[in-house]
Length: 600
Image 1 (cartoon, rainbow, N blue to C red):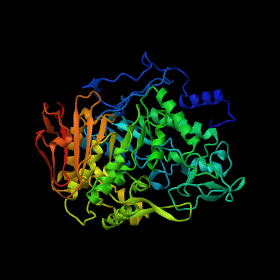
Image 2 (tube, helix red, strand yellow):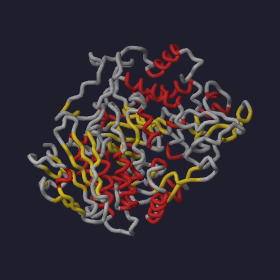
Image 3 (cartoon, rainbow, N blue to C red):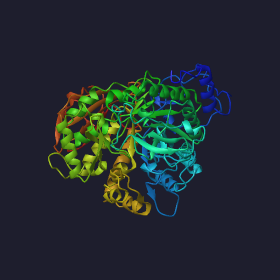
């Protein structure tokens, strides 16, 4: 129990009142209490709930949704972006973002993750001053709702901490209720040596309050002060904010830094049972919500810890597949899939009602903690050297013994493809396209950072101006200049964007790419990553092959177990594939070999 001093009945009543402030007028649910009916096409959902923008009644459903695979489909893919990744100095950035999405990504992706769009003081939005406002430099709630009406909307619930300059913390400093108990305090003499954190700054910050000096807990930075979830009022306020965001069109809620929300001196203060209990509570509320709300946990940690947030199908609907970015990067740099393949073979299928969230690049760096125990230290050292050669940087984290270890590689994924361990400097675009096609092919919902879709180069000027490594991958495009690049067929932006959009359109029509479709990792040449996907209705098979090397590679078709009496085609090229012939892959080429042509 999270709050042993609070009667369970009272807690339940207060939770319901916080999440459904309009009362207990219950929305209708299907008669059998099962999943909401979703139209089907060829045995799979015609579209995922990511695009569902319906608003329901004020109260909860009579019965929760049962776990099912109907919350998403092969047609679901997302773009990750800041609200001001595109700007022109004249129009609201959110207006420009919607214009860009409509012009370039309609029919390519159907969801958009807008990174924190609230007023903030640091960390590019992750030091929030007011969860109920939109940063006026970006636009307002009407702009957010407009985007949410056209694309499935994902937003961040930065629930671990808030800005030290926000209203809540200023009220805490003045000892004004209820905020005087909203922040985590600790005694500097307490046993804090085992605390796990992703930064090297001091954990505690001394502040002067109306009640005297206090030491507040700061997992990430001294401008990001951690909330105290030991106080149930904090949880209830967060639930009110979640409801507010849902009412404004949010359908996927990214629980940022959720692993750290419960602290306990003398412990690691990460993944504690109370943290999982909070996620379970949010899952119950999501499953009772009339709107199809999806919870996504952001836990940049090793595999077992990350997968623990599926719980027993009663916590997150989706978890980030954090080992994927560094493992794909290693495969592309080394020309060898051995480590990537071994990890992929050991990944369990997502439980019913759950899915993986796949990506290679995000607003943060390429996290290295998830490959601890997967990649040998010498391979990690080779990656660090290669990324530095490509113009990238490395960020460190503190260890309990006082040492440091690589926390993330800071480099645009496109520029990271400019080198290999062998020194190969050519074929950068082909290498990059291969890396992104892996994300499209494997089990889960694919997501693409806007700077991957746009082949954005490392922003070293941004690093110098802003004084942080992560700025290298947070470029802000001038919209007219971006449009000019996209219109030039010879530019990197046009060449990469056109081909990624083509592949994503093809992918969306393949039922074998449903996020929960069967997956089997193939044992092939170490230069080839091969996975077999089969649709939920077993009508379509796709053998997705990815040559991560600078070599041309051939394999005999029989190695894929192609059924003799069916016609096989490469969806990406339209070529017919003979079940008794040879399959050739050029350097960095990908093939989607299927018994059904796209849309067939």
